[in-house]
Image (cartoon, rainbow, N blue to C red; front, side, top):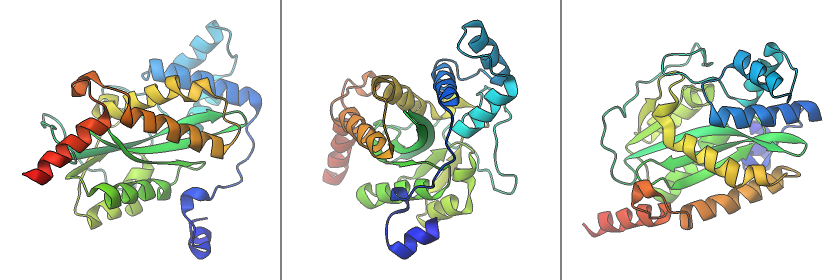
Length: 267
């Protein structure tokens, strides 16, 4: 698919695989799993099965729930190493942010991927966030969990805002791939990776997912990829420009980010 996009001279993010249809019952179950995962990210397939059965939302078995979780790209998150999937041949980089004071824009960027439900299917959203100011610098929507749409998002952010000193992700195969790490090395950016299953290592992006799902995605039943992209774009414009954050002095991410950039340029 990437090669076809290159031959047609169009962005890979505008090309989508014809996915195998997912049943309405599975889509409803995936939505329920996603909502529980946002509230209780430590729940595994066995615990989710029990809760869903007790609340009469589903009688699906543990293996089926585990299969859907893998399809959604989510795993149970723990303080200690978990069974989250990573590519055995890919290099894993150390976590560089422990005890690091991150107080300026473009010091550290973070990236993650989440699942977004639609009326008849689902897509994945990847976003690049500036750690200190919470500003979303770029994002992409895709219906496959490949590295190329993540690379595109980072390249766009660098082209528009310069580069960070450190780039932090989890240990997902998209981020440990040669395409992704090679791109970061090419820009001389230090690579940091969360401990396996340690959700607190990338907590600000996790909070973004919670906000966008409860304040946008769950309120709209997107009828296709175009509608999902429009909704995400609309919400992230609001998030950056108008949504204040107590952690950054009740400023919006735009105010925090561009104030720091202005002061840096004036120095």
